[in-house]
Length: 386
Image (cartoon, rainbow, N blue to C red; front, top):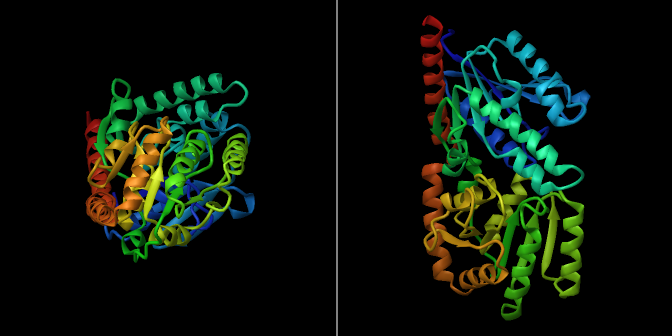
């Protein structure tokens, strides 16, 4: 092994690091930047591109970004077939000391004969089920079989939430490490200039994120809070859901109070957090959503769902409120409670920021991840000698 540990981080990495699309890409930017700053590591990112002309190797923030040709055909077939062969061939040439895969790359790295670490960010089979569409039930079952086989194969797994650890119980055979996702260090420097009545949400527009449920809650809230405003940042992932939401907004005369910002960059997200009185995310299914972690780091109180991984992030009644995502009245009540009480918002926001500093700062996450790499190397060497 060389003096510096050569790591290959297999992860979806944005074409423009200033504009990550989705939570995993946001994690990639923060984690890779922090790992690359550690003197004991030689950081390489292996990722797949959206366009063939982006392929190649570039330097970014001290890390080498290896951009491979884009995905071809259905993602599931690609991950278990050509994509797996492509990734493993590239890794054999790169010769990393440790392979750290994320998301579907854990499927592609399955069985690769080097020390391996796999971070589980979520459950593709659940996302597939919520997305619906033709034969979604069958595709969800197929994804579940492939995902669980990949979990069972990994010698070291990073669980980003106790919720993820629970879902891995009885399936994962390797060592499970509890390390939460990092957020951009700039989130901790957000200068708060709150605009009264502003509720902010950063999430894709789709059924799983419960966009319509939040719109219904906001309609109830606005009856007694005429100054309330809802601002939603994120791409449209479900056209049917978007149509339903926009129809609801029009029917209830909320067009002047609800703003859809579309997909925006990291700086824009932080600007929205600076002025938000409350951050709201009432999804039906989440592991450890980046939006909540970023809001906490910025000192914004959070209203979120009382299910899946979200209760492990927000301390109910202290750093925010947990609500029933199927009950618009419950959501509206807690949002209204925060909008009416500036002292409560300040106390909750301050505690949220302190919690985020201890749990989500990229420096802390990188140091914990480095220790997992060391253990993965040690275990691999022991197994090789036995």
